[in-house]
Length: 91
Ligand SMILES: [Zn+2]
Image (cartoon, rainbow, N blue to C red; front, side, top):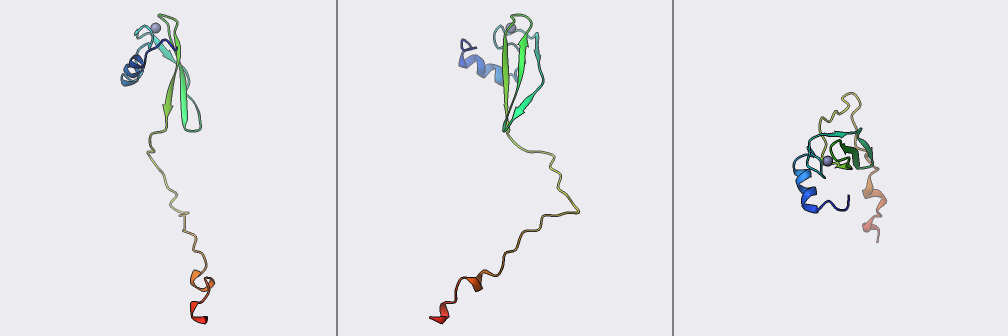
């Protein structure tokens, strides 16, 4: 895949990966998305030219966040710090 120019990669990404990055054909098929850490990828192959490459996805945001209602996170309150910091008036 090293012969694919940066310009072509950009065009491919801009088009949402809707055509073959090698021959430009639309007869492509994407496999299952796999993920690890903050990256995900899927194998895509072209039936016209036989090319195969990975579409790579990155975490760009969060959505549809559901927060627990009956078990709210209560901020942990630490002990009164003023007392443990030593009393400057006893000098
Ligand atoms: Zn192709």
